[in-house]
Length: 428
Ligand code: NAD
View: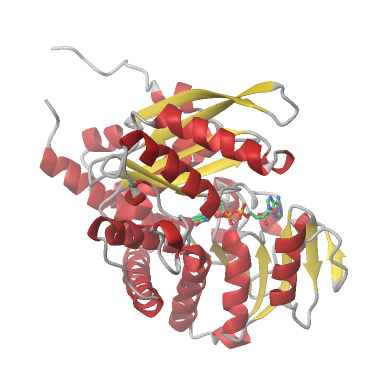
């Protein structure tokens, strides 16, 4: 009989990046509480499939450039894989793998019939024209055609991609099939089968989770002073939702730096400004602070809605918030987690807190498949029900086992995926 004792874990070589190491270390912290067979756990450490493509496109000046693109599909045990597409200079195979792993636990935690995927193109979207982005999106979609589909893998927007990107992906896929296939992507414009409330879903979901946590902690949301890092789709909407619920947003930041006003910021006007100018660069009301200083402002709730690895062992010691809500994926490092645990600052973890996006994406896919569309209030209510249910399970596991909410959220997700994998057995 062959022994597996000395077989090296090959996955870590291909995917080895700080973010992937974080995702696997978090998995390893949760596994002992999730009652998982060691063989099943080992299978779940490895993404099922990874695709690396190269996307040649013509730039507006007539020159040609080749951009690397990736798609990682972590687990198809519960259904098609699902996950965003990002355009960013730091996109890599390992980053996509980590984000795909987290998507698997997130979908399972929310009880959505999906597994996790993530993809992206390494490029600088801020330096590219609308037409160049369209060419890139269509070529990237074409390269992925054999691997995506409404029953295989369903992309969605993520950093620097939006409704327009999804419309180009949907059109490229549909032209190859010869008929409209709206269910190939989610987060697309309403005119082509998008769902009302998808655009706001992630940011609104972040605030629904914060509201549930405040209820449990007996804090009044309307009395909280909040700081929001990131002012894009997630952070911009979350800031607005916080204001709508009576909280005071005293600081926000984006790539251009931060703005602070202890009396509260005018979020609607700032959002309109950021939409018009592409960022808050040049915004001159309130006190300008650096991105790093913004994180360390005294506040009640710090919402992280920019990108990964923002809170680490060093700055975690200097934070002056009472609670953190992770709208972004992977914004807190393992060392940051340990310091905050020690300091007693609770973290509402990404796999729970930003799950509003994939949940309403699921609603969009179901509506597209059924060709029957729901109203805004119905979707908002269904989303709140799903997030509250997930929050309550995480809260209970966390208190019963005396573990942080991040580990509890992963335990819930990992347990459901491993139970399904166990039931299906090992093919062939
Ligand atoms: P986005 O591109 O719309 O916005 C990102 C924002 O972060 C921008 O305002 C940008 O200027 C800012 N930013 C970037 N680097 C920064 C830094 N160092 N400091 C401060 N601000 C910075 O992207 P998004 O869709 O809002 O995604 C943000 C995060 O949320 C990502 O981690 C993404 O994976 C996650 N997320 C997004 C969705 C979604 O539905 N869009 C769903 C779940 C999770």
